[in-house]
Length: 342
Ligand code: AHG
Ligand code: MN
Ligand code: MN
Image (cartoon, rainbow, N blue to C red; front, side):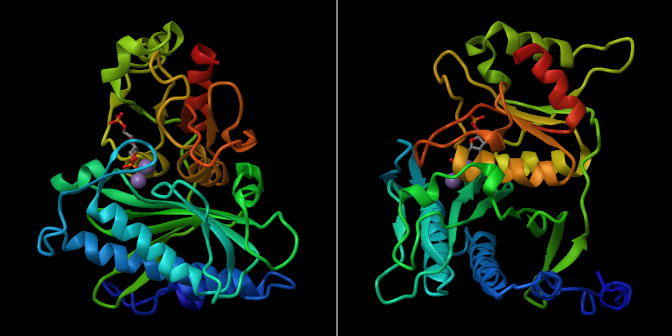
């Protein structure tokens, strides 16, 4: 980052680098960049601002509660899930940067309407992650990934464009709607975090080149599933919560919104896991728009992400809504988990 862009008066973000300035700066360093990618990110950031604004006034807007619908995962959909999904689709589809989208809230790939041009990218997202937290005013988020289209031509994209492994991601990230709103992303050149200044309406660079600690001291897992886990997963959790000669017992932290649990893990170190269990052979989390994007971000911050057998980013997807077990976080903590469950 340019030195002169990063320095602002104390207490002000006004002379800090905005997300857009940062993307333009990165674009200028990329030979042959067309601005398409920057344009797509602009649409995603716009959607994030609209969602953030709606999330922050959820109670006021009387938007709390359930729509009564059931999504493709068989879960009740909350009103803000639908709002966030619609916002992302509407903001992105008219930009001309994507050929198809994939969303947790929609059973099939989402086509770009005929009146809009089709672009070279594929956007997949969990529009609102941790939606069970809306009614209790705890952190929630949006997760997204961007791939290049695989199918030839300029026509509509297909399911094939969506079913790409995490290692082929061009950029991925998340937005967390918490005590402050943050936009965190990687396009393969470091992981960068931007904090939203509501007075100005912009995301400002606040966490440049984030690196996850090599090891942490917290574990994050739904231990209510203990009796459904395999012996290996139980043995790992039994071990991590015990004092050992070389370390104290790990602390348990579990918000129940993956974005929030991952964000803490990224900043502080440690591990977040959602293992498979006797009822759910592939765990709970979705590969394409939950595990894969965060695995990409985590690896680019120096961390690791595995399903217990292989890197998350190496899994070849076969279905839009497929699930995967997940162990993600500090490299040493993930390696420890894999000694038990791998
Ligand atoms: P979503 O709200 O998008 O359906 O995702 C919820 C996910 C994830 O955010 C979280 O880590 C996990 O569900 C929590 O599951 P448990 O309640 O089973 O612990
Ligand atoms: Mn989710
Ligand atoms: Mn969701």
